[in-house]
Image (cartoon, rainbow, N blue to C red):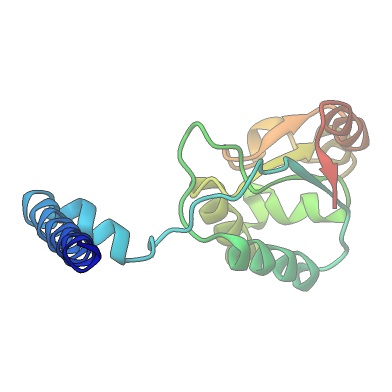
Length: 169
């Protein structure tokens, strides 16, 4: 009697394993995309947890310093951002670098302006430029590229972003 019971339990276990394998194979055949999704890691990593809104208070003195900053942002960008995603970082320009973005200086600073425009187009950065500094350099509001958001006072913009929950970096 015990022997028959053990044989029955063993047969049931084998049948269970075979049925599970067959059903798993049928699922993969009927829905190959789902099977592939389980096997492959996503090309674009899924964001982990809540992403922080970050702000950088930028007052650099050379083109090289700004280029280093933009290169670092490019390294952080793993994919273009969609319209409903916040940028990786909000940059507030309010030092001598505002002169780099004057349309009249485009030929001289083309590389850095193009890099900034590319990052803005990809949604990696939101760049604000200080109108007070623009006036100090004799730059009118219609003499800067349209991808830059003009703000009345750069340090005040940084303070406002921090009050809205942005993290200073």
